[in-house]
Length: 407
Ligand SMILES: Cc1cc2nc3c(=O)[nH]c(=O)nc-3n(C[C@H](O)[C@H](O)[C@H](O)COP(=O)(O)OP(=O)(O)OC[C@H]3O[C@@H](n4cnc5c(N)ncnc54)[C@H](O)[C@@H]3O)c2cc1C
Image 1 (cartoon, rainbow, N blue to C red):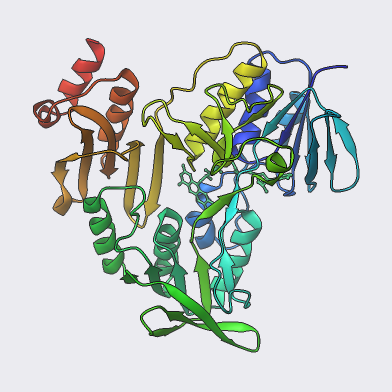
Image 2 (image 1 turned 30 degrees about the horizontal axis):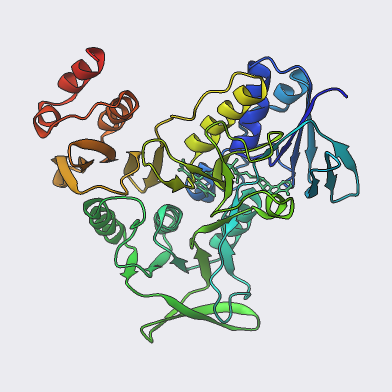
């Protein structure tokens, strides 16, 4: 049989995998199956510019001609229902069964919905894809006051976007601080202050106990402190769950994601996985992680393509991420889980600063606000395994660059 890679999921990772397979010289058949109908598109703008742009469409990752010219068969608006490892076939929702020599699972994640009363009312939305964003944009036009549930990256971005459109926005975060899973407390408190300055009514340390409505439409959110907030639009930013079901039903290991090794392989060497759906032992953080970022999905896709074309390389990429919240550009490099020391560089009052995270002398991560140069240098330091001292950091970019070039 001719080699055929079936990529399941046409998001950031799936589209990159198709491109990278060809770049790495794979000359068998490639099929990209996606349950959405749009060509693969950039997701980050959906919580930012897209909501502010009436009539604006999706931003394609690659033009249609790219897939045609590279012999990538697009099976869109179709879902893979079953991965049959013993038969070496996948079954689509229209009954079609396709043989494979390798599979790449790039099924991403879906929003986690709060299990509280009233969560099915009209006017409550979660944002994961283009169709969701279109519905939110339409509802926003007719709305005056919105509640955003969840103060993670997406919740904070949506709150800023809606406030920028002149809506009255309340953001509710159960944890004591926003962005608590990802950044230093100093960054959280800065982001909270800027959100309040942007007119967002920010409430931390309080959860949602239920949604109230009339005639099937949401009109209020009830909070765990007994209060009630009126709103005609609710957007949920309450995290995601990885789409592991196909892999689980096929008997592959799952641990907060599909478990893959350094070459993106599952325990079945014909089946690889990448992106938001994967859990893997991180080379730098020395623990299993599941990362949700464009960088991780794209880099894992490149590695998966190298594995399939017989040039496996260990996944030693530096994780990085960005988030645009109003006029704040937040960037993170590395993972700060085990940090026990934090150094501030720059000045929060000047809206430009970074927090450098260390475990003892070892650099773990850098969170930057409007300091792109720090972010870029941090990525290079982490990749090279260089641990600057406080003095090095205070000497600034020239010193840090010198350390990299002399390594
Ligand atoms: C609104 C928003 C803003 C974001 N902003 C940022 C940002 O600023 N910076 C950043 O780094 N990251 C950002 N992210 C995260 C980033 O988009 C994701 O990490 C990235 O899309 C993950 O890529 P992926 O290929 O793993 O999954 P996805 O891009 O989610 O693609 C998975 C695709 O698989 C499809 N699928 C699932 N199951 C099946 C099946 N059985 N059959 C067929 N198709 C299937 C899904 O419908 C989906 O189309 C944002 C995400 C969202 C939603």
